[in-house]
Amino acid sequence: MNQSMNEPPSKKLDNLRAGVLSEMFSFMTKSEEDMERTFAIIKPDAVERKLAGKILDRIEAKGFSIVGMKKIKLSREQAEGFYYVHKARPFFNDLCAFMSRSPVIVLCLEKENAIADWRTLMGATNPANAEPGTIRKDFAVNIEENSSHGSDAPETAAFEIPYFFSTLELV
Ligand code: CMP
Image (tube, rainbow, N blue to C red):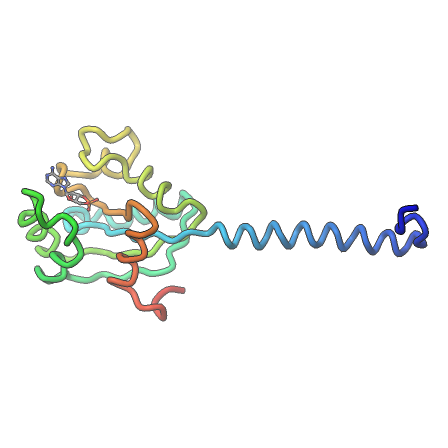
């Protein structure tokens, strides 16, 4: 015979409540586990044209939490270190000159599916190929001065976030 059938009604209720709470707790834990962080830059072309506020507005409207943010001016060496994976590409020198010509805003963003969702919000690298309503379609100048950057994978985010932020700066 099922053990629970011998239990008094109040005990059954307790067990039911415990089961429901357990389900809720696992949902909350799962939700926390599913949180993802990505790294983002509002690039010099956008900061120069005073578009940072509009871009931050879109970021928050899409449900990202800004867990780190600062305005900095990259040195040429810092830009080269950040874009090291592109060092063999023909656009590398121009890209590093552009990224170090004036201040940028660096961000650490958090939400479920943050990496993919931020890339969707930015749109394609080349604004000519970007979907309407994306940041690059609406704001970018060209494929290089494309207003924003985002990590393309968890391993990339794991390099890019600590390149600019210490743990104490992520809240
Ligand atoms: P980002 O997402 O920051 O990643 C690398 C950057 O290189 C990219 O955005 C562009 O700014 C730049 N980039 C990529 N492809 C080209 C290209 N074909 N010509 C010039 N710049 C490029």
